[in-house]
Amino acid sequence: MIDDQWVPPAVLLAVDLVILTLREGRLHALLVERGIEPYQGQLALPGGFLNNAGEDLLEAAHRELNEEAGLTADTLHLEQLAAYGAPGRDPRGRVISVAYLAIAPGLPEPVAGTDASAARWVPVDVALSPCTRLAFDHRQILTDGVERARNKLEYSALATAFCGPEFTIAELQQVYEAVWGVRLDPRNFYRKVKSVEGFVVPVGATRKTETGRPAQLFRRGPRQTLHPPMTRPAPEPPGADQPVAGQSGTDEEGDRGDE
Amino acid sequence: MIDDQWVPPAVLLAVDLVILTLREGRLHALLVERGIEPYQGQLALPGGFLNNAGEDLLEAAHRELNEEAGLTADTLHLEQLAAYGAPGRDPRGRVISVAYLAIAPGLPEPVAGTDASAARWVPVDVALSPCTRLAFDHRQILTDGVERARNKLEYSALATAFCGPEFTIAELQQVYEAVWGVRLDPRNFYRKVKSVEGFVVPVGATRKTETGRPAQLFRRGPRQTLHPPMTRPAPEPPGADQPVAGQSGTDEEGDRGDE
DNA sequence: ACAATAGTGTCTGTGAGACATTATGCA
DNA sequence: TGCATAATGTCTCACAGACACTATTGT
Image 1 (spheres, each protein chain N blue to C red):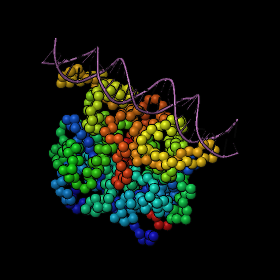
Image 2: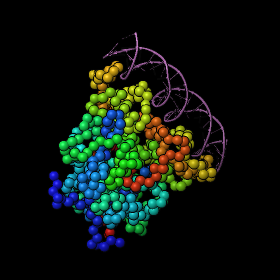
Image 3: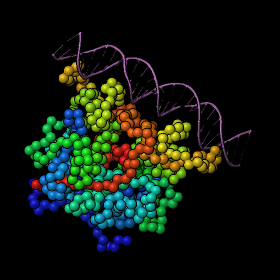
Image 4: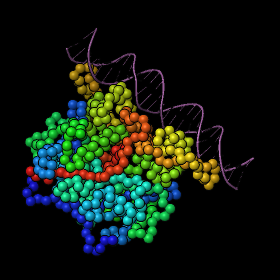
């Protein structure tokens, strides 16, 4: 079928980033306004081509994270999301994009002055609203990233990645509420979090709130997976559930403890 | 930072397959003996390079599934696993591999006569034992695939993909036991499966067993996700759990397919 | 009858949902 | 004292684990 002279087609490889954070109780994603064609002027995920043939994928993700978002990778969560390679996804040619999901604590300022001057935080419900147009297949990638984060909150300690090094239980609850888009009972949430050994560890200090009793501060504990998992309220109506059938681009994690 | 003449480096793109099935109560993966360099003679995952620049990733996975395993994609589960792109993973150059996970019902014969005459089913515990050497980074890919399957059994109806169109509850239980490597109580398993609406639907017929009362036959139902999930016995000792840290993202690739 | 497997019923402990109550800060 | 939030306690129901028991086949 293939003659001896056949050589496989070469492709270009890009790395795109879904960077999520919490700002004022809402889930935000970092988007950049494209300065060049194609899709010039439109919103897109931060990302770019592989720098050189010797660069590792994860390394490229870290580089883009720094270049485009001004974020150092020290404290933040970064995991591979999926590969996207539909033939027509980039008008410049055959480009395969490996998407990464990054979770960052709420940064006070989006970014500025850097290479990423055009970057800004956008609430995900706005970014994914039918009115918003994203470049390439970035809507799909962003959707998948948010979905991954939502699922991982259930069975992993990912929520702590949205918080700073020290946080209160109430702050952690806000993460769940914002990402899942639900309201949780503070008492049950408190009991659940503290009942999972190693999820969070008390730091001994307290943080004053605007009003009311000061809250204890915690750090993330050694535990990565939650057993039993955090239960997400099921907003599904009775009957069969979402199709979820095919997977053209990606899938999810699957690995519970992976990352 | 990048001058106007800069062009991104091109890479080769391969698709590799983790194909899992159940044979005689044990979890097996399909491996091929490589006929060409590199790693000639060693075991590897089925896979190969993108056929042409216009081929979709999933399409390529289906093609390889057919070429190398002789499997038609009609009845089997196929989802993307991850992208593997470590710089040194393929001695021939920079090759990024997008791995797919396929789940197939137990086939009576491995394969033969086809392009994949060198393919054979290997128990995963054998394939992943320290003694077995796999080409490229296929050990990692296989490990990730098995891990994905293990996790998905918990919260999805993936187990039915291991069974034929009609199956008994006991057969479904064997899937869980083989993939998880545990023993489950038949009575509790039966109760659990039948309590999840739409997981399996009775087909009205029965299947005779070697001895004992005939079992009712079922088909997979419309439900894709299991709420609440199937609970996996936790073989973890108390204390912090597995690190599960990063994912360097690597890959492998396949042979060229010619021969 | 007996063996062997399919399928049902019961008890109990754990944990989630709902919600009352107490504790600790500030004005 | 009053208000707001943190933290703890109580009750109930759902469900997983353990296991006794009944049902239906073949020999």
